[in-house]
Image (cartoon, rainbow, N blue to C red; front, top):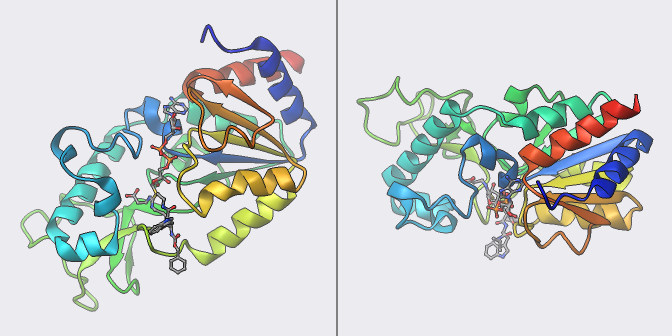
Length: 255
Ligand code: BV8
């Protein structure tokens, strides 16, 4: 926290107070303090020898459906054991200062919903939801304990296809509606807070540049520089679970 510039915290509060439409664009970093490894760090422990970039693909699944299913079942269990952190909660509190605030998240962990955010767009799906391989049947809130003794991955009870996580894998299109709405918001918002993303994954990572080019103010929250840093007006350098509560405290002082 020592390196957080108080003038930039004040300016962030000022820009939020002045903004009508605010977008908070988040990546894995906003969940780091909840104990969920960022995507790049997802190679911890048991999964250290596997590359998430290879597991999070259709080919990876077809090559070893059981392995990929078990990787997601492990992450589902992890996500359900963790709680939203002060960064998620502060984003909910920011809703009180903006006319309209939407969270656009790359994360699949449901933590923004569980923190209480009212408008959340999930660009990459949700790990707690599964669907049959061709996507025609969806099972929200999948319970891995229920199907303990069945062959993995389980089969769809409607069409007998393999079940798979309802997330967007590399090489797959993002949900059309979610992507269009996200670009519309990026083009029309007054302020975009970019929280906890390395900015490596397209097309999501292009949203901050779309916002900046459309005239929005862009602020990044990240303990280190990213692919987004050059697009932002400035960076609040620090962990979102520490930085965002500071911004909320500053806003409270002003009311
Ligand atoms: C598409 C769900 C096209 C799954 C995810 C070559 C071959 C194939 C594809 C491509 C290619 N080149 C480019 C592409 C496109 C590809 C892509 O972008 N690849 C990159 C990696 C080169 N994109 C796609 O494939 C997308 N689809 O393009 O389709 C198409 C078009 C027409 C028809 C068919 C297809 C789909 C991309 C979605 C992939 N799915 N997730 C799962 O989770 O298992 S993406 C996955 O990785 C995450 O969801 C997340 O979005 C992403 C990681 O990004 P971050 O969230 O930024 O996380 P990261 O770990 O990188 O960074 C964490 C940051 O947090 C860091 O900056 C760190 O400093 C910071 N941090 C740490 N602690 C904190 C913190 N910040 C704040 N506070 C803290 N405490």
